[in-house]
Image 1 (spheres, protein in one colour):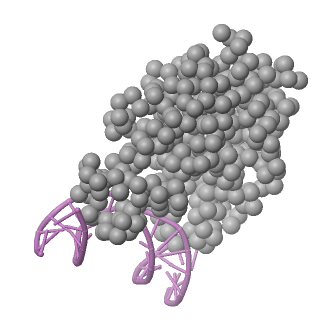
Image 2 (image 1 turned 90 degrees about the horizontal axis):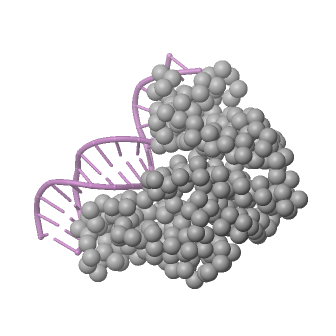
Image 3 (image 1 turned 90 degrees about the vertical axis):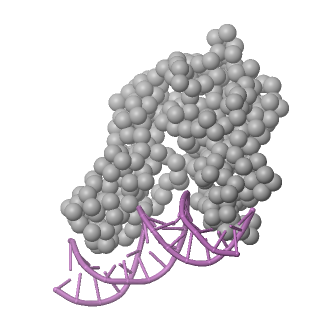
Length: 170
Length: 170
DNA sequence: GTCTATAGTGGGATAGAC
DNA sequence: GTCTATCCCACTATAGAC
């Protein structure tokens, strides 16, 4: 499971996910991408979920890195947004179902969230901020805002509200 | 398409969606529920998407009704949350993909959103609030908050921040 | 570590008889 | 307006040969 081929499989799977969307993430297509047959993959991973978990783990590491490169709430929010837009299918895979924490490296989830809790020490407000940013991103990705909507304006309003709350509530 | 049978098909489809989740929403299972065969459905609807659109339209009407029964931002948020928890699979169907507005009654989307814009006249802030509430709900439904997380507290923090912003920004 | 062959399950949709 | 029969597609996964 940690042979070189396993890495190639995860890389191919992620390329498929990011390049052709979530429904392209099938054992057959992953195998095609590598010039092998689907059953061969099972010599390297027990099932499809294991491949997805490996992709999610990679994604969360990169996501955490992106968030860590900001200090203020606005910067963190901007990095969150940019990451999601750069990797929309990956972002959805990472967020739209329960994390299988047993298949993820210990502490990875906390490490990813750390920058937000550093910027917003109040737990309730931090969770609200994480949800708000996730909501903005997922509605954007789902194409649910009207065509002319000023999304930069909505992000700015959101950040202002959260910053004010953090300043007053501390 | 507006015969009595069509209504029964939508009702059965929705019951399946809400009772057994999204993957249960198949032409075969809808037909089973009505004691007919799948091909018969095509005499009433051109394709599966048409049935889904009918479900979404019904859901949006009910959702709008729920939101309209609140005046303050807190009440509207509480109704939004309650609606989503009462109809999780329906809520996801309504929010996780682009609206096919051509298959939806004219003005329905605006009617659903109206209560929020009434409570928060600032468009940017209103969109941020809608996104934030959606983010809270979808992370809740996806089981993405830690087990002990105080979600009522996060909702309260969110509403406080938005109310304060509305009061100061007006 | 790859293959072929296959099991088993599900899906949307159409043609044409009645 | 319902049926049977069917087509075509897709998928995860396993067994066993090489």
